[in-house]
Length: 189
Image 1 (cartoon, rainbow, N blue to C red):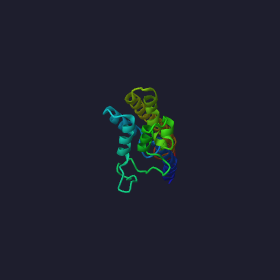
Image 2: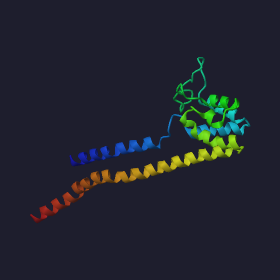
Image 3: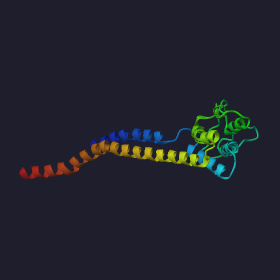
């Protein structure tokens, strides 16, 4: 009975901690920003301009159906439509082509595209090479994610100590110490 109680306490202790760490490790939004950056690298490496790159990434993320809306579920990691007030990457590209400033063109775009916007800004504003900037940003994102996952795994390891102690210590006492004490007590009596 004590072993079952300790196991239940251990599960109550572990399950919420594991769920919290998994939620924290998941990237924000439904579109993986590293994948968006990789798509942009591929488009720019093919020799297209930044506005054409934005259109290509937008097309890769969500093709339009006959009604003009985003076809949700085209790619497994693209599970959300942009809200009515959020500008698509194609709209951002159109604004840039029409002469809008960099910040004005990105106004109203989905916040999940901020890494793409920040990585392409020096290329658009100062003429820097965009591919290394995008690759570095994607690499930084992946390294940060890996570090957070390792930290969560280390934290989980330290959280396992208490439930394991609660389960194994009573089991050790009941299965290891008590029989020895009982056998010595029988010999003495």
